Amino acid sequence: MEIKDQKTKTLVRNHIEKAVAEESGISIEKAKILVGAFFDEITATLARGEQVKLIDFGNFRLLNKRERTGHHPATGKEIQIPARRVVSFTPCDKLRQVVSE
Image 1 (cartoon, rainbow, N blue to C red):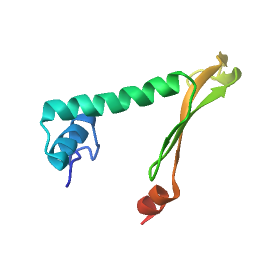
Image 2: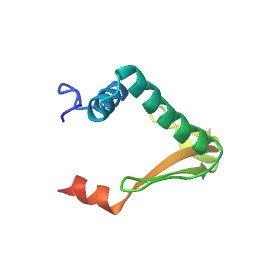
Image 3: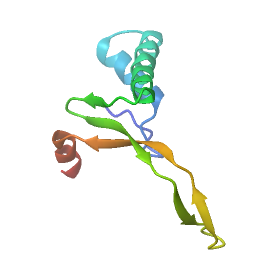
């Protein structure tokens, strides 16, 4: 099933909802609830600082970036980049293999 937008070649949330509805035989409204709950759970888990492991897909985890000095690209002036948390994704071997083929 081809579910991404052919113009942008981007998979967006409503494409996932449609695919879930079609593959499972449920209504689009129920699929929206299911997909929403899935993403909400991933978001809440990461917000708690916990790792998300999805078998046959990959792992999401939080990285703590320290404060550092950077440069403004237009002016070249030094600026301080504050410490922050970022989400990191590491694909599993199976996903790496599928993508590389």
